[in-house]
Length: 195
Ligand code: GAR
Image (cartoon, rainbow, N blue to C red):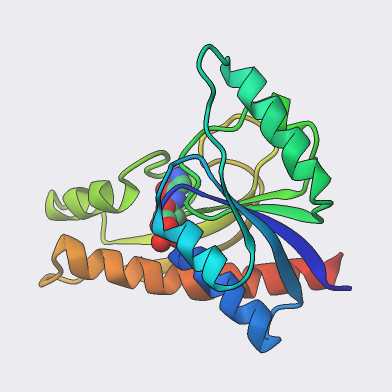
């Protein structure tokens, strides 16, 4: 059965694009029914509109608490009847006020290996750690989001990304993103088949 997806983003949306493309080509048996950004005017929203998908900037209201925002977001997402919620570059921690509505149905992508460099600027931090001789490679992961742990939860897939001597931050970022686009689609494909 075609999986209905709501995708949450905060920026460029290249991973959203990978999902949209895979859905359109039939590689992934999924339909993106709504894309929501917590940031205004991001390119990911344009990608969604270009694909004919509902694209929403979901702004935090003045005086609204984190829990209130998350509950309002959950209520909105629920109206879209998603099978899964995919966090593809969503740079905001979701509280249980959101997660309680989608147990085992929120999937996050992160540009680092489990328990290494959670949070923001993960690729930059990996690049700097490599230069200090602390790591030999970095990676990407896809995992379920059971609670408020940052980039943490049952791992669905990981992929190592090598770092080369002549890498710049830009070349490493490009390699990480390329790896993410493939890993995210392949992992969703396998995950949906198992269900
Ligand atoms: C991706 O690298 C994703 O893994 C990362 O944001 C980027 C979004 O790129 N997410 C996190 O760091 C989550 N902690 P995109 O907007 O081009 O898909």
